[in-house]
Length: 104
Image (cartoon, rainbow, N blue to C red; front, side, top):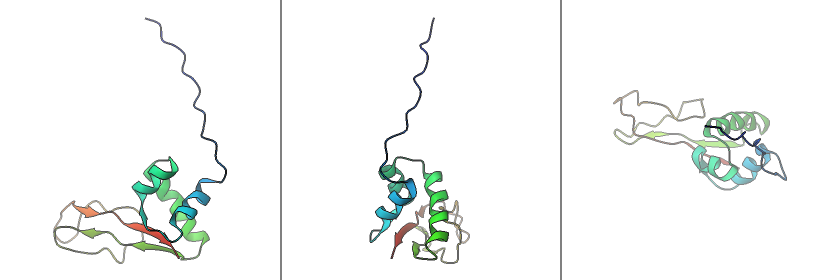
């Protein structure tokens, strides 16, 4: 059985860079990494990498609403990483609300 050669993947036409798109999405609006991923068309891990660079470039204008445990209510206020933690350190639950991001 013959298979057809794969068509080369063509990246979408963009008027601005991915980071500019993320900054324009987050200006005045709070979104999670999953929501940003859906709007921009890239993976969640890529979004988190871009958010790290954006946080450095904007010098703490990126406001992170910390993730929280749904079981015991523990809030990850001191967490420096931008991604969602895997487990709550208090009750060991994995039911954690995603952090959200906004730019002031």
